[in-house]
Image 1 (cartoon, one colour):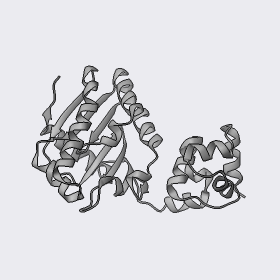
Image 2 (tube, rainbow, N blue to C red):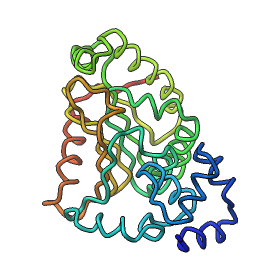
Image 3 (cartoon, rainbow, N blue to C red):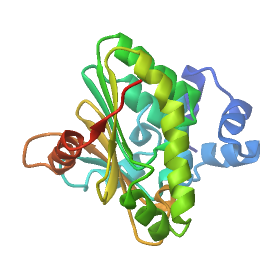
Image 4 (spheres, rainbow, N blue to C red):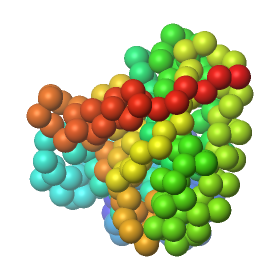
Length: 242
């Protein structure tokens, strides 16, 4: 019996049916979790986010595994699609100083109206928002499309679509968009000291590749490497104007 999960659901005033509907699973599946079965990682993360608690509070045995990770590494998601969309929204919503997006398209975020609204709200609150997208006309975007196996034209179209969706944000002070022609070995998403690093793998779409959640602890930590990378790409990218 998982009493931790039961208590958290009660505190959130959610029942088995509510959890099942939010995660698009059968209510019987949630009942099995309450009886002690440990969900798949993507379901654990989604439940924890829905109940506004840490995963380790619901499944302490899983939390013990996380503690063996190196300093600065908070979690590793097996695939980008396994990261609940609410986690992405919360990442940016918690920012108090700076938000950064470095990718070829980051179309999965641009298509989420809630994410765009959060970026706009954070900028209006005085937070610097920097969005770095791949130049749709650049060879690097075409090469990435070939590497992923979706084709150069498809990748260029994704970059153009993303740019079109992010474009209205340029009306808001504090938001800048730049186009880069850089070979990326990972896509990086930053909110202050928190980073989500979506690694790139040859022959694999970014959505299927792992995501590493990092916290910047010091200049020797792993997060600093990616923060430095973002800074260098930004410096060499072309500024977009309306």
